[in-house]
Image (tube, rainbow, N blue to C red):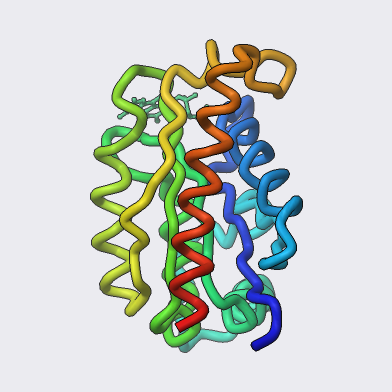
Length: 180
Ligand SMILES: Cc1cc2nc3c(=O)[nH]c(=O)nc-3n(C[C@H](O)[C@H](O)[C@H](O)COP(=O)(O)O)c2cc1C
């Protein structure tokens, strides 16, 4: 089997989004691995502004559909907005359908507060199931994101080590699912 292709999706296009820091952290861990290939997908580059269902022609949506078709699995790094995920992520996901079937999706959540965005994860899992994808039970939470990062790096070395281990565990499980 060829090296699996697992794009990482940054789920918010908000100006001053903090989620870009955990997304870049996870992406760096992914790039360090030999057992997967990846690409950074910024949802901000796929803003259709309205729902474009999978059967409608649209240049940007087609670009996403081609990436999603090539993908063997996905990582989504998403903040929690009012206990759910950003609307721009939903519009992106809704623009394809068959492309997700049977593919694992692992979620990393980001929050300002201490709950780590877990309520968002539960909502996104439901969407993943409806898309025919396989939600990965192992998740990584980035709580209190503004304190965790300093100049785009996790400031505290112990916390950095722990997050690296958690990301590794999540990626190990995802890649193992693809070997079956
Ligand atoms: C519209 C909106 C809704 C939010 N709702 C929540 C929430 O439900 N729970 C939470 O912990 N943080 C919430 N936050 C705060 C985010 O967790 C915080 O902005 C964090 O930095 C991650 O999002 P960001 O990537 O947009 O910065 C919300 C932020 C916005 C902009």
